[in-house]
Amino acid sequence: MMDSNSRLHFSIVAIKQETPSARTYELKLLNEGKMEFKPGQFLTFLIHTENHEIRRSYSILSLPGEPVKITVKKVENGAISRLILQTWKVGDIVYSLPPAGRFSVEPGSTYRRDIFCFAAGSGIIPILPQVKYLLNAEPQSIIHLIYSNKDEDNSLFLEEIETLDHRYENLTLLNFFSDPGNRVKERGRLSNLNVEPLIERLLVFKKEDALFLICGPFAYMRMLNFVLMLMHFPKENIRRENFLPEIMRAGQAVNRHFPERQIFLTLTGQTTQLVVRSGEDILSAAQRQGLNPPYSCKGGICGNCAAKCKVGKVYMSINEVLTETDLQQGWVLTCTGFPETENVVIDFSES
Image 1 (tube, rainbow, N blue to C red):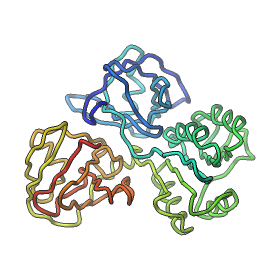
Image 2 (image 1 turned 45 degrees about the horizontal axis):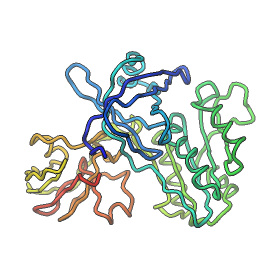
Image 3 (image 1 turned 135 degrees about the vertical axis):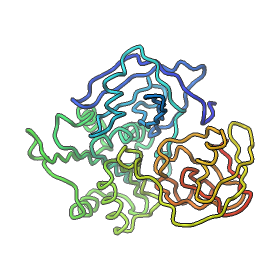
């Protein structure tokens, strides 16, 4: 089992042009051992430019047991996505952290439920492996895939998704194109006005069992979350994948003051006593004192820096990924976490 901070080495063995602005990269693991992951998790790639290390997370498109694939879509004003698309070629060696992320779903076997998958644009990338996995792992339930795009030519995996729709009776697919070329019958855009009646029309089983997987631009996810909360769906059943580039730049919001604290941090089996300065988050304190804990977004978004608080209390200024169950189990985000009490104990060993 690889620890959460080890480096993975991959060779790029194939590249496929998916749309004019997106490519899929097939990767061969060069490390010894097997890379274990769950559908919906991501890899955080370590990219070096001008003597700086930049980290970017990309969802694993594959299912466990399949060749590892990621898809990179060009982001407007996105220097890293442009760099990858322009420079990565077959035969190159690339580096990442082990798979991470909390967007994966455990299949149910004792009940039937509606699983609503809302994806917009490249938000389909972490959604698609979930759909493919759950179609077989939870065949008694119904998966509703609501996929929004500008047009057909720029829709990722559209043909594959429609093949799944024809093959599986427990999958319902709705496409929304805001500016379609030919498919004018599917013209439309989701809004807070039409989401509620759409869900009410599609819902088959108990409302309290319905699960929602959401990924797309920030405004899109915020709108859907707002509507679902107004419809009184359980908060625990609304899952969002938040590491898209425009959200990752959101940064931190510290609105409470804490004095300098001493903490103990366990990483790769070693426990270190650290000083966290006033106004400094736990991750930054660890880095300042020479440790190298896992992280990606540094904004409370991706969950890559999550660790367990074994002793004491940690205040998080931003948390867009940990659920109530995670919090009850002691999970905290170290990138937006500040020790509220002295001698807090943080453990990365279960990450």
